[in-house]
Image (cartoon, rainbow, N blue to C red; front, side, top):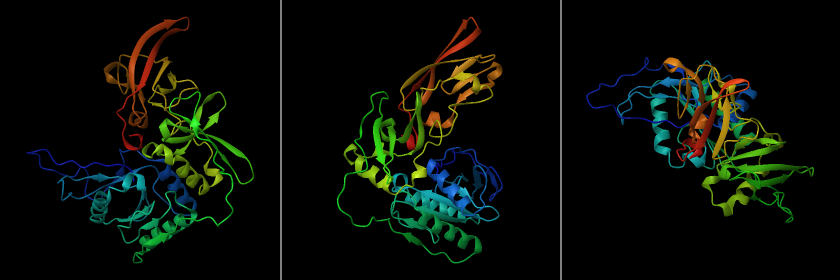
Length: 356
């Protein structure tokens, strides 16, 4: 489930919904996670039709905060009033009250919430799927599809529980996980390798003090595979966490999927393609110098560069900002090919979401 916030109305201001209560609108919250994207893809592959992109629902008045929140569930099922939330134990253990409040607000406008509760989180709704494992198995996805189908058909809800997959007892053997050691070329990164059952060895990198997993990409920067969130775990327990993850993860899910954890773009905007980051940059760094050939730059701020009258030319991607990145210096220069800009971006401690 993507993070959300509720605020009490300002004194003297009468709260009112932004849209008619119950309206479905395009979400202004772009934040999602690789786990949510993977579950969405598996639901679609199983035959469910879901809203494209991110959709939000205008709810009625929040009895606690007094406002009228516009909530963005992780997945909305097409031609129904059923939505899906994916709850990781790493981010939802302390969020039970908030999750119950979201359920109630969505139910108040006719929506049924089906939650995939990972890591053994207890069910809070009639249709919830409780998965003991931290990563949804094929059985958990099948149960989620069945729960969504029941909710769409109006069948009374049943909490489904999926036990963690246990390996058959066998003789103790050498660990398939290689040594986890500090990387010699990337700060805050660690070597890791995993030997497949056929003997092939995957050369992996744990990036950004454990936040995400990547693979080498020739002479370029490592490419993103999936979020790990090991930065929240004692380093002494990394091997146990990694062995559990790799053992229960399909091989095809251990391949690079994008340049950055959120996709292929670090800058967005009409002239984003004129900002040159070069191949060796990755978002686990602390600082990077780069150049740009923007047309008509007039000003800049921590989030990007603008033209005359404040028109956006190139902004940092919202997830890059959540990751702590800021534009900290811009200088105008010229060379034999004409005018250009020298930029510096710096990663600050101001990190939000799964980057915190």
